[in-house]
Image 1 (tube, helix red, strand yellow):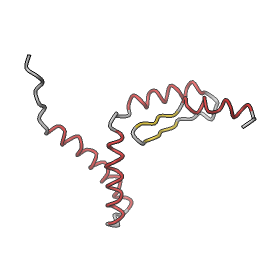
Image 2 (cartoon, helix red, strand yellow):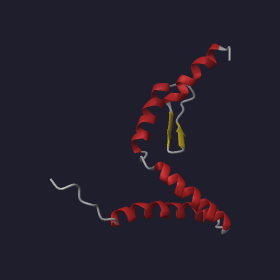
Image 3 (cartoon, helix red, strand yellow):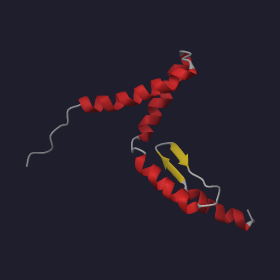
Image 4 (cartoon, helix red, strand yellow):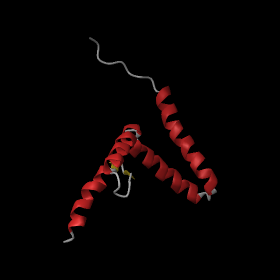
Length: 102
């Protein structure tokens, strides 16, 4: 593009974008406070778990099964939350193997 405004815009768009594990989250102040968008992005980035890609995989598979079973929309989100909670419950039950002997 030849318009100078469009050459600058992508820099501001990066300020408020988080992309991790196939999930993209964007924060915008419509250009009125890009620094605030950057701070909000940093805060959200700190809260977003590293394994969000695993969440996406499980959510995708559950969504496919829910559509096949014609699960009503109002039940889908609670089922997803239960599925994600089960990920952590199964990890809590898995014994931690000891490290190498010292």
